[in-house]
Image (cartoon, rainbow, N blue to C red; front, side, top):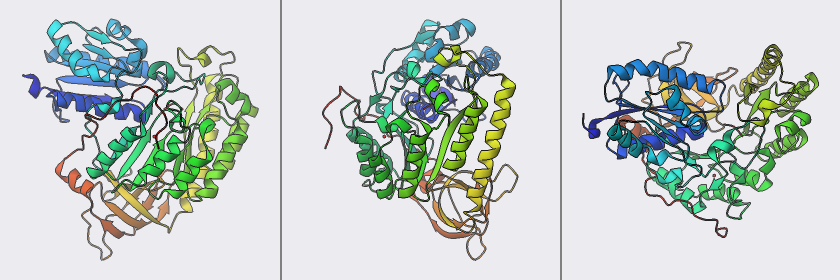
Length: 490
């Protein structure tokens, strides 16, 4: 089969940054003549974009590679490529453990993927290429965007923090910021293609601008996004409490298309644990940010990350976490049981907790957060929400006929696409609807009363035709730090 007909599949694990990287990998492959494999097709190239942060990430990778081995043996010419954070960490060890892998490439080598595949095919030997630093900003590369209505936009890559539980800085490198003009060029290009929502991505978005000497750069960027024609929703992830400033809160409150949503990792409510985590804030500072956000944005949905069972965590430390969760009243929380990650300082700390202790505390935290989330969602019953309709329909409980959308505050809403007169509405992913909440569940809202309004959009039209925006190709890369001009694991 000629290269221009070779089919590819990309499998993604991990954070939003990995999802966005996978869009770049797909864009590069399509620019090189590959076509995307349909679900029923056998792919000629399988790319696994790995995560090294999640528990058992290596077991998942080698399990997947084990399943692919007989598939490759049955399909001569098939290639397997492994990229992402675990590839950056394990390097040639992947080929040693799974010699049927053709290509291993790191987090800084995404642009090399098509060349490495061709070289492996020509030389009939595995290619391992791991760069130690970023040479080309990922957003300069072509992308096959998965959504017609929402897009990721990287404003920085890497991280300058040194959290003891996190391996990301050693795998993604130190923080590199894109120039604001380059970010806005990509945002405008997406909006011109009909995209209604962008999410600004960075390991620590509110440290954006430090590299080129403007600590107000992120607030300015949010405000500038407010002037982009056609852009209806702006989100960002994730900020670090250490760098959160009042000018960002003011920009959120005063820029209409910036959504009333904030995901800000807490990790622990114990000051002693935060100190051992090397998190450069304390619980009082964290709660003061929450108070300031709620004063400016009373209806903001605030979410967080919490780690339970960090080495040395006492029952008193855990109670401090529960106290902060009660006071913060998070809309939802991503809760994790601590487990050692090889290569992190925390993995060698004394007083690693027994699994049963961590599990019991974790269950108490989940129960408390679910109680808080459910109360907050029940309080929204009867309220009107504007939804950007998402891909997919129905619900896991079998209540077919409902579609799914995201409210401006990020909450998931399952709604009945019914007109006021009772007929079915032709609602497509990417359209915008208004409806009233009829039931608040712990993890989502339900709106079964029918639509109040329905607005068809260009994004909905594009979804119906299967078109995908491909912005990113040809945008300028970052350069050396310059004077300030007149966006996982956190």
